[in-house]
Length: 145
Image 1 (cartoon, helix red, strand yellow):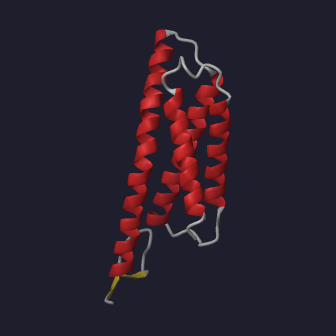
Image 2 (cartoon, one colour):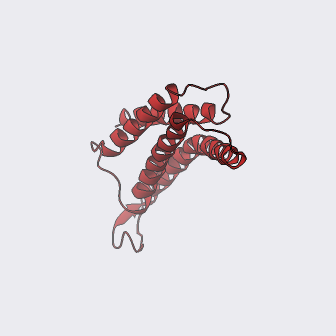
Image 3 (spheres, one colour):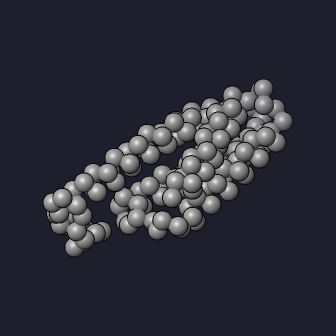
């Protein structure tokens, strides 16, 4: 396989093979597509929550916490993807990202399950579904090494 030297400000002087770089970008693109689903769900849920705040509707603290922690776990996942592509790959048995995202997802699930008024709030289901999605994504990435 032919090697090329990529001159990037963050990877100056490191030699990559064309095939390995293409695989890295392809895997990252697939992960972004997988993470787009909970990101869209959380965006819709946050817009509904902000709309309810503007209308003066009383909000559940647990439902808001569910959205906050689900959004944090999605940001951890997207941030780790950008880190792997733009800065450097994460070591194969370094599970810090997976553990932190998994813990954020579990806290989001617990706060989502402790919401009392599930039928009245329009954003609860989307936040809960996003937290389940992120929990499954972090479990899958932890077992993929």
